[in-house]
Image 1 (cartoon, rainbow, N blue to C red):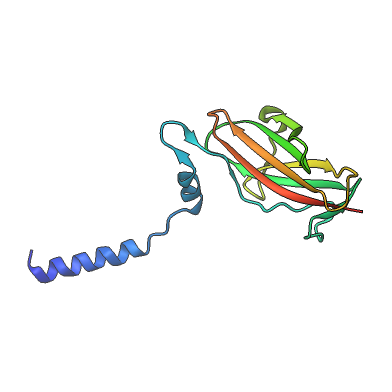
Image 2: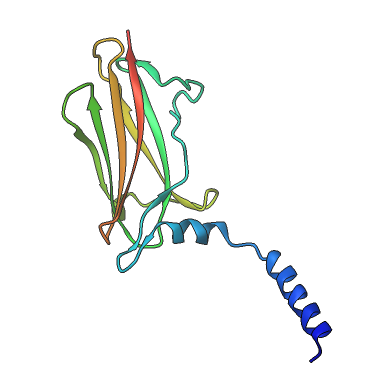
Length: 154
């Protein structure tokens, strides 16, 4: 093989490899793997209150009902999903726990599992911060926690 043919072949191979696109889902899952343990759960959405999606400030009066949609998936099996609330300086409290076998709900439209988590904003002092945490636990014990702060208003 002469040098001209070899050079042309190398240029062609480099050009073709530049056209290869990696599957984004595979990259997301690979980026969330731990050697020897498996995969972490992944969640793609930013939370919105499905009951009031136009409230982007997350300021609510006591008694307001929130419906938070969690969109998630994992390569490994999911064990459970939990939700915690921390109201002001009080200790974190578990306000929801669901075993995956009981709550599994795959959305074909979103190509992921979805879960609506409901929370009623407590009546507390104005400007109290309420931290909501949604935790996904895989059977391999790897977890993902997503959070959203809500501010109580009079």
